[in-house]
Image (spheres, rainbow, N blue to C red):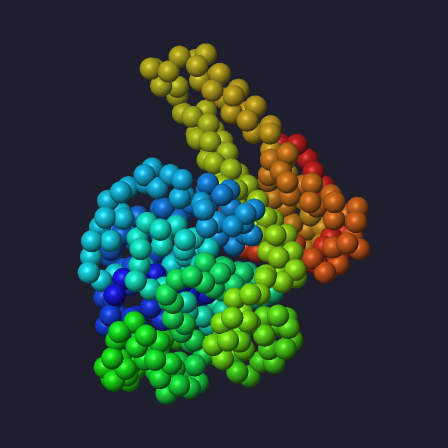
Length: 378
């Protein structure tokens, strides 16, 4: 079997790809640091990075347009050997959450026999994303909804099967039977499938236990309905759903904000390294091969570049003052100023800040809690 594996964007759902080993061999996993020792994983990850770079989006952002056409106009610009090395195999399984958004590109270029959509419970997915990527629970739920609905739409006219991690752990016999029935439609004997599935230990797939949590406190009505419809395999109902306005607004606001911080952090670290190098050069004798006027010119250029940055102090209610460095034209400054001017409009909107050494710590707070900002040129 040649298959694309489209899991919700949490590690636990992705691990379900291991269930396909008897039919597809070892899955090529290229997301969330899953080491496989296969060079193809690096190539696939690089191609996905190109796809999202072309769209000027991160994987956690809402696409300006559907990503399904991204890359199809220039597949020859990427290594043809990647497609050849995969497609010529008798069996393969590519597992990557980003396939939920980019599946049509891979379906066109690799022509898989089947697509597999695997999903966790929405809250379990959100908790996993919070632990792995430090996303707020509400954002994790929105990503679960966005990726799952995208996967369903992109595989609407494709041969597909559906795997529920919740069923695997809570109703194993039903999971095995449904899996066998779905594979049977592709010519695989149910008895043989059941024997292989029954030999799989439950420990092969980890799960985040949310059984003791009242999910109604977190899930929206739409998310609860999507999960229930999938559990009942009511595919027509869930495929016709659109991303809810709440999730769309949350991902657009939060995703753009976080993506901006990631870009700023990279630029800030680059400038800091250049400043450190310049200061180190001042502390040492000038290399005989470097004329004095050349060294002076380089420092002047670096100084002019650093002048494009500002130090920002942010005061949030009931919290210590936070400080960071960013471009004086950074979008985040415009956002913070807008929040200060219109606090009531941001009461239910979440802001995100990286802080601490190298931006390794994260703070989330309602926009209405922002008390003031102070900006000083560097």
